Length: 127
Image 1 (cartoon, rainbow, N blue to C red):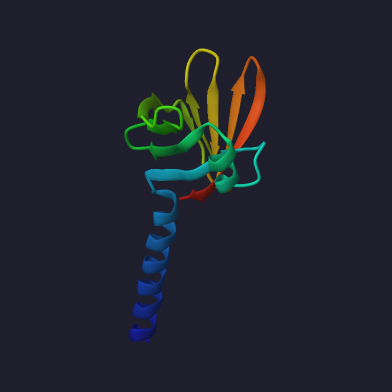
Image 2: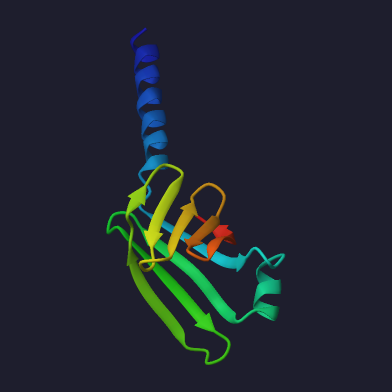
């Protein structure tokens, strides 16, 4: 009986730790992103203005780092922004007074909102 109780307690402890790890992740990447006017990342790279447009998000530091590389000059631009809101499903980052990014953690979609309207980007790799 003691063995059975020990196995049950150990099983609950291990399953509880595994489940807790799911929500304690502090870093996310959104890679191979493309705008909604293209069918996939390869199409965006071939026909768009960018070679690279990715995000690294660190919830512990409350920062979102954008990596962008234009075809015109090939220069890699790195910009770090402050995260203003986090839920289990969303991360919100203001880029400036008019532009805000909302990251959909479960789907890899990024919503852009500004006075010009709302747009979407999709990321083939997000984790």
